[in-house]
Each structure stands twice: as C-alpha cells, then as structure tokens.
Amino acid sequence: MNSNRSQVKLKAARRTRRQPASDPTREKLLDVAGQIFADRGYKAATIREICVAAGANVAAVNYHFGDKLGLYTEVLQQSLRAAEVEAVQSALDQNASPEDILRAVIRARLRSICRGGLPDWHFRILSHELVQPTPAFPQLINKVGRPIFKRLLELIGGMIGLPPNDDKTRLCAISVMGQILAYVFTGPLLAGVWPELTMTPEQVERIADHIGDFSLSYLQEFRSKHGAVAPVRKRRVNE
Amino acid sequence: MNSNRSQVKLKAARRTRRQPASDPTREKLLDVAGQIFADRGYKAATIREICVAAGANVAAVNYHFGDKLGLYTEVLQQSLRAAEVEAVQSALDQNASPEDILRAVIRARLRSICRGGLPDWHFRILSHELVQPTPAFPQLINKVGRPIFKRLLELIGGMIGLPPNDDKTRLCAISVMGQILAYVFTGPLLAGVWPELTMTPEQVERIADHIGDFSLSYLQEFRSKHGAVAPVRKRRVNE
DNA sequence: AGGTGATTAAAACTATTGTTTGAATATGAA
DNA sequence: TTCATATTCAAACAATAGTTTTAATCACCT
Image 1: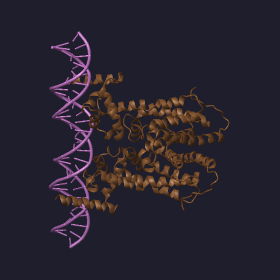
Image 2: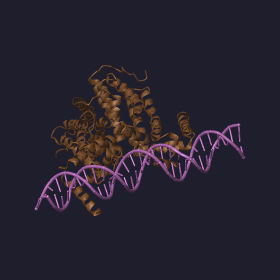
Image 3: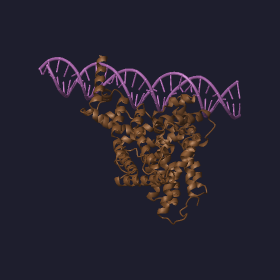
Image 4: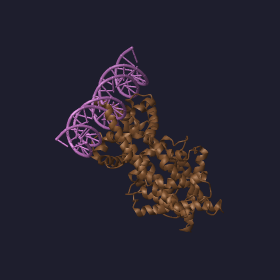
C-alpha cells in the first residue's frame, strides 16, 4: 500500500522533470504559489492558502510536488528561467560600444524588475531569498548571480582598463548593481519616501538613463585619469 | 482573577515604556530576540527558541511584552534607536563642505552596517522589514527613512543646484543610497560572487571612499554642466 | 518573620500547518 | 464495458507555535 503510494509519488516527481506542461492543476498551483511565496516568503506562505487560491485540494501540493519545499523549489527554478536573465545576457552579448552595452544592461534589468508598477513576483521571490536563504539558494547564486556578475565585471573592467578581478572593477560593478537594486528591494521604502514615484514605462526609462549617466560619469573619468591611453582593449564581450 | 492578571500585564507594559533598564530577563530577552528575529525573520522566529536562548521560560515573552508582536515591536524600536541614525545625522549636520558631508554620511552608514564582518542585526532586521513589512513598518519609515532621506535630498540638491524635491535630486539620492544598500542587502549574494571580500574596517573605508568618488564624479559634473554658476546656495543643512 | 506583589516555572490549551490516508472519481486503454 | 491508473477529495494526524493558566518562588517592605 505504502510502496504503491510512494511509487505514484515518484512517478509524478519524475514526470515533473520531464514534461513541464499539460496538467492544469499543476500549472495553476505553480502560478499561484509564485505570487503567494513572493508576497509572504517561504515560511509564512501556507499550503492551504495556495491551494484555495488555485482552486485545488490541500493534498494537491503534496501529490504533485512531494512537499512544500518541492513546490517552492520548482517555483524558484521557473522564476530563474523567467527572470529575464536572457534579456540581460543578450544585452551583454550585443555588439556595441561598452557604454551602450552598459546602458542596455541597466535598462533590461530595470525593465524586467518593474513590470506593472511594483516588482513582479519573480524578483520579489529573489529578494526573499537574499534575506532568508532557503536550501535552494546556492543554486540561485550559481545560476543567475555569478554568470551575470562575471560578464558585468568583464564589461566594466574593459571600460576602465583594469582586469575583471581587480578590486576597483568589482567596486564599480557593485556601484552599478546597487543603484538598480535600490529600486527592487526598497519598494516600500521608496513608496514611503517618494510617493509621487510611479513606475510607468517612461519613468523606468528615465531612471535607467539616469543610472547610466551617473555610472558612466565616473567610469569615463576613471579611464581618462588612469590607464588613460588604452583604447578599446579588453573588450572580452563577444570575442 | 482575569482582571487581576491583566492588571499585572498592564503594569508591566506601562513600566516598559518608562524604565528601560533594571530587569535582567527582560533585557536578555530583548537582546537575544534581536539576533533571532534578524536571523529568521518575524514569522520564522519562535518564542521558544528566543526563550531558551535567553535562559527564560516560554511564558516570559507574554509576561513581559504581552505577545510576540509586542516583543518584536520593542526590538524594532530599540533597533531604530541604535541603528546609529545619530551617526548619520550628525554627519549630515556637521559644518563642512557638501562633498565632505556626503563622504561622511556614506562612511557613517557603511560603518554602522558592517560591524563585525556581516551586517549587524539591527540592519538585518530592517532588511526583513523591507521585504516582509510587519504592522510595525510605517513607523519605521517615518522615524528613520523619511528624515534622513529628506536631509540627503537637501544636501545633494544643494550640490547640484536643484531643489530637494526635484526628480533629478531624488534620482541622485537613490543612486547614492543604492550603492550603500548593495552591501547591506546582498550580503549572501556578494559572498557568493566576491568571496574574497572581507568586511574589515579598512575594507569598509575603501568601499566608502569608492562610493564617494563614484558619486561625486557625477554630481560635480552635473553641477558644472547645468546650473553651472550657482555658488554654494541652497545649503539648507545647518541653517 | 510575615505578607504582598512581582516574577518565574511547568504544564496544558488552542490554533495552525504540513502531511498522510483511504475512499471516491475521472481518465484512458483493451 | 471493464479494468487499471492517475487524480481529486474530505478527513484525520502529528507536530509546532503562540498563548494561558495555575502554582511556586522570589524580592522587598513593615
């Protein structure tokens, strides 16, 4: 009896890895769970709330995903896939001047962050992970954090004429990232402090432009002061 | 019977507001709770864990603080008081050039953030609040967020020759803040992406200097390009 | 010492939550 | 249809967490 049950579970779990689609309640569950996890965080989100919101039975989560963490892990993976890492990466990969690439990266990241007016749930989940890492966290770092940061380091290193692993390069990369993250993580804080700010697409563009100007000012100044000469070397991007 | 009990509770609660010290278990509770709330967040932190860590009985929290939220609220208030808002404010208030003031603010904020190697628990609690606001959140905004941001706007507005409520001023203020916050909120992310980074006092100073350089580059460029003339007007600080 | 009120302690209570169970129902093939 | 399998459902289980209760203990004052 029990072995039968666990076999069913295993089957369901295996199918999970293979065929992503075709089960309506499964999909509904994933979709709803994403928003609720994003709102409340892993611990505070309850299976029951997720299930009623999905119009499913309480046992549905355990049946389809094994347990709560299984559901969360899958939501997170889906989130990583959808977090528009591609948008940023393709921005990084395009063939253009480093300045334009940097601006494109900032714009891509900012756009994907504030979709409807507040950060979409994909990113809210990530911010939960930053504050309260779950067991699913390391994979998150390695899958989205590291590769993008690495390319950003190469890009900025090239712009200021320093190797990607130079401390100054890293400080600059964090300075750029930080300006973007301010709009992600401090949503409620920003709302409290700058109520008139509405995240319309036009506003997002203005913000992106500002961050670009703000950052390039220092990067270009640095380049002309130090390494000075070096023309466009160290363009590792697309090469 | 019950009225007697609730009277006791009220008394304890009232004493709470008045005399901050002199009750060892109360203090121990507050101290331990701060760290545990900072680690796990409000929901995931349990009264039992807090109590055993404080060497107190499970009922101690309800006796001294009414309920869990009461304890949390008090921890948060103490955190706000101790968050070295004063350090930042006194940095903002000092009589110096705007550039030096800005650098001092950055340094003060960054120093108070990474005390021992990772952000101290006062700030980790605040980051939890940003991601999962509790009922205690609005007060937090009004008590630390707004006033400091307001002064920062005045300072930066003065530096670039724009009024504090100009959008450009706000964008710049957020750019400065964001660079600092990157080191607060993305602790684990940073560790995953720049493992060699150790938050020694010297490192913190280097980071602060960098953020100062990075920010001033744009602010000064902006000033000389636009408003250009305006000497030191709009120095609302200390006036 | 005795008594009064504040504090602590152990245990129980209640609500919630993740999970499991076993029956009921739907689905799809032979 | 009939059987087998997958899925859903209502109910219950077990564990946990916040809170309450009641008695014991402590501290201080007369």
